[in-house]
Amino acid sequence: MALRVARRGAVDPFIVMEVLRAANERMAAGEAVIHMEIGQPSTPAPLGVRRAAQAALEADRLGYTDALGIAPLREAIAAHYARRHGVAVDPARVAVTIGSSGGFVLAFLTAFDAGDRVVLTDPSYPCYRNMLASLGIEVVHVPTGPETRFQPTPALLDRVPGRIDGLVVASPSNPTGSMLDAAEIAALAGYCEARGIRLVSDEIYHGLTYGRREATALAASRSAIVVNSFSKYFSMTGWRVGWLVLPEDLVSPVERMGQNLFINAPTLSQLAAVAAFDCTDELEGNVRRYAENRALLLEALPRAGFGRFAEADGAFYFYCDIAHLTNDSRDFCRRMLAETGVAATPGLDFDPARGATTMRFSYAGATADMAEAARRLERWIRR
Ligand SMILES: Cc1ncc(COP(=O)(O)O)c(C=O)c1O
Image (tube, rainbow, N blue to C red; front, side):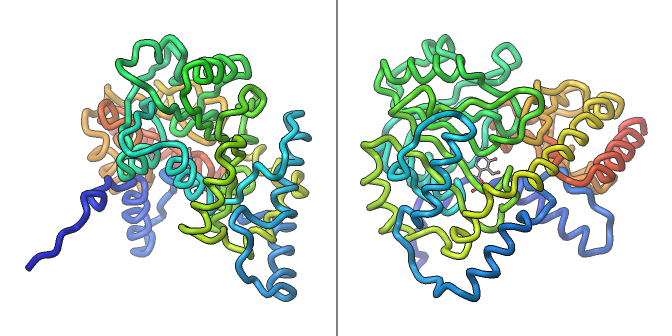
């Protein structure tokens, strides 16, 4: 007799991971693939972090830690908000998590019940909707466009029919790179607080901005959940360590949920991450390279036929409208990979309703690779 598989198991895939697999297969077959699909730095963790990890490996037993993380890391994270944003954060409100992904699971589980309604803007990071859906939380899609720089506004929320229990925002955003300034975040935070809506602010691309300074929801709200990670600015994707800054009422629920689900974030990564805040010189070097890549592509992408993209002030992405090239972004990206060796992500990952005519390029790689990708794409589109 066939056994039942839970409906939750029918969760949509994270399409970019499928593109990555196809790209890696081509690389294994000896092809020169340029990775513009995956949103991860091409650099390792900064040297200070690697040294701290080596020392911890020798000196520490690497047992379990408190569910909310080791005290030195929670204190270092809190100090980061004072230094960078002038916001006082009590380390007791910081939860160290298994990447921001683990943080989202804890945040969604403790802030929302099955049947609650959470607003996501389209396009947005696909795992929000897939996680929420698999937890039985209703996703309310709010389409956004260039008029609001692909960000939500109180006016857009006013038009949502029915109750809203939560709102997820990201600044800088994935896939567009667009940002909310301090006043815009404050307006959304005020809107949410007045209506009992839990604001979840994904700040994982903080530090990766080009000319604009990022703002944190912590400056505007005591009830928001702030999500961040060592994956992007700190160049530590595989270390699986991130954090939440929690409102008082969620600290104990997140601690208890974390104890039960995960026990703790990887101990070695926690010990090493304490050093990350002292590696600014190396990390700012990475940001300068992203800025160079961004400047290069701002010129080259339009020449290659990808000239319609969202205003990209942060992160390391261009989200392009390719309606003039295809109405099937998945097939387009597949052909592009096969015929040029350049891997990019179909927009369907980010916007199930409109993403058949959009795609995302990540420019986190080496500058020479970005230049080569632009040359290949230009030749391909001309043909
Ligand atoms: C917007 C956004 N949030 C969260 C994540 C999850 O990252 P991690 O779990 O490595 O912190 C990603 C990864 O690409 C992302 O782009």
